[in-house]
View (tube, rainbow, N blue to C red):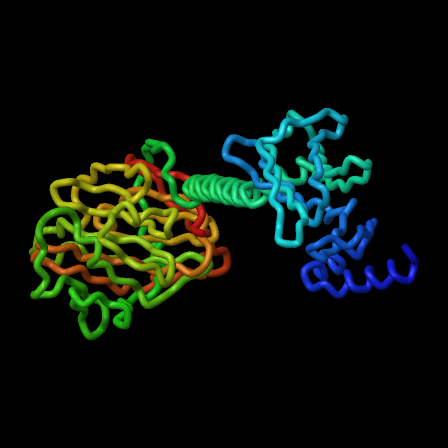
Length: 418
C-alpha cells in the first residue's frame, strides 16, 4: 500500500472522536503502533494499541487501631493491564491485602491495591506497577514517619498533661513547705518553760505606755463602742447561739506599730463587778480580716492573742493551742508588744504578775486586737496609763525593760508574720 494512502488513513484515525481521548491522554510516553489493515465490508479502521504507561502510584497510609498501618496504592492510565508488587526496604515481597482492576471508557486500566504492615515488618514500603515489556513506575513511603505523625498529637497532649501534673505537684509541695516554714517561723508555739521569779515592776512597763483607742471605721456591726473609743461590748441586737467563742466580735486598735516597745492595759472587772469571763486581747497584722473559723486565726496568718473562753478556760491561738491555768482571774490585763525583739507579753496588773510571753518575728504593721465576747454584764475598757515621773538618775541612765518571768508558762516560739 502506498505511503500517502497510509498517511491519509492515519489522519482519518486521528479525527475519529471515539479515539481522541486516547491520543491526548497517552501523549506522555505513549508508544503507538498503528497497523493499517485492508478495507473490510464494514469499512471500519482496525487499530491496535500496543503499550500505555500509567500514572505514578499514589500511596495513602492510614494508621489502624491494632498498631499497624494500612497503605493504599492507586494508579490509572495503563495498557495493557499492569501487575502490582509490594516490597519492603530489604527487597522482601509483601503480601497485599487485596487488588482490583478496572477499565474505563477510554480502554485504559486503573489499579487499586492495599496492604497492612507494622513497624516490626519493615521501615519502608514500596508499591510498583509494571508491564510485561519491563516498564514500571514505583512509589515509596516511610512507616516510621507515619507512626510519628499519627502519634504526634497524642504525644503532645500526654506531655502537656504530664507537665501540668508535675507543675501542680511542685506548686503543692512548695505551698506545703512554705506553710510549714511559715508555721515554724511565724507563731507555732514551742514547749512551755516553767520558771519561778518574783513580782513584776508594772511602773517600768508603763514607761512604754501608748494611748490606745478602738478603730471605729473598721468596727463590726454587732459591736458597740463609746464616744472616746475606749469601751467595747457586743450590741444589744447580737444573738449569740452559745456554740463556741464569738471570734467575729473582734475590733482593731486605731494605732499601728512597726517597731519599738508599746504597752497598754485593759480593764476586765469594773469596780464592784466580777471579772469578765469572755474576752480576747492581743495583736493582729494590719488589715487582716476576722472570721468565725478559729483555725484561721493563727500566728501564721497574722494573729497573736490570749483568749478567755469562760468555762473552757484560758488558751492561746497557737497551733497547737496552749491552755493556761490563771488564778486568780485577771481583773486588769497589761500587754507589752516588743516589736523589734519579737515578743508579746501579758501581765496581771492587779497581782503584779507576768502571765506569758509569745515569741515571734513581726513584719509589716500590727495593731492591737480586742474582743469583748458575749454574755458578760461588764464591757471591755481600754485604760489610760500615764507614764510615771522619772527620777534624774533614771533619766540619765535609762534601763531597758525586760519581760518578767513567772510561775506561768513562758511560751517561746520563733515565728514571723508573712
